[in-house]
Length: 50
Image 1 (cartoon, one colour):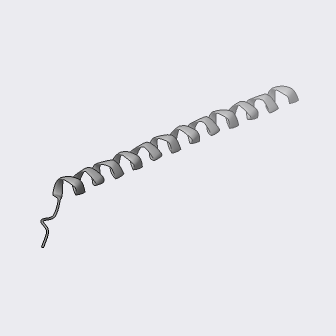
Image 2 (image 1 turned 90 degrees about the vertical axis):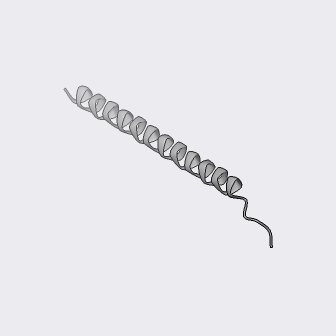
């Protein structure tokens, strides 16, 4: 029977962790941009009405 390749498993785990972290970072960034755009449109609406 073949020996398990622990270094390969570790590397795959690290890659998965980096990918998840990057996705989370992008998610937070898009959420922040959406909030900023939402607050800009809200402030523009109130300025127009005044």
